[in-house]
Length: 168
Image 1 (cartoon, rainbow, N blue to C red):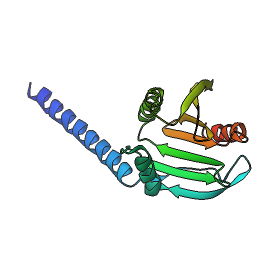
Image 2 (cartoon, rainbow, N blue to C red):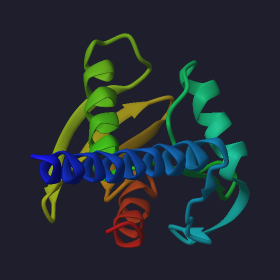
Image 3 (cartoon, helix red, strand yellow):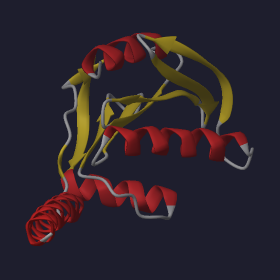
Image 4 (cartoon, one colour):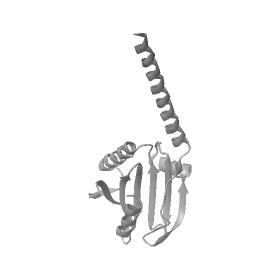
């Protein structure tokens, strides 16, 4: 009986250490977000502006008027604002999936400047397509990343193709 209690206490101690370590890693990642990757050019347009890390995640929070638990972030503007790419890294893949679902549900309520125009599958992932603010918009999940692309209609297809290649 004593041996059983001893092993139980050791097991609980290990679980406590693992949970504490996980919480520490989660908190440290969201407090000091890393730089998410961005392509140098998109649809033949050079990157004209870039925000990364904390600056990018603060931009996401400001745009949505809420805080997101992101561990990495980047925003890239291409050409003369003909395209923009937002990349946010969630701590885990399932959290990125939840963010995509929340975006889809919120946009479908009809109180956003975006109008859903369709969705399609690309290698097992869903790409959501929208129109709004004079551009075409696409958003999708790539592992633990949430990707949003906005592009002028004239370059939207090419920009999307390159974005899907950059974030498989």
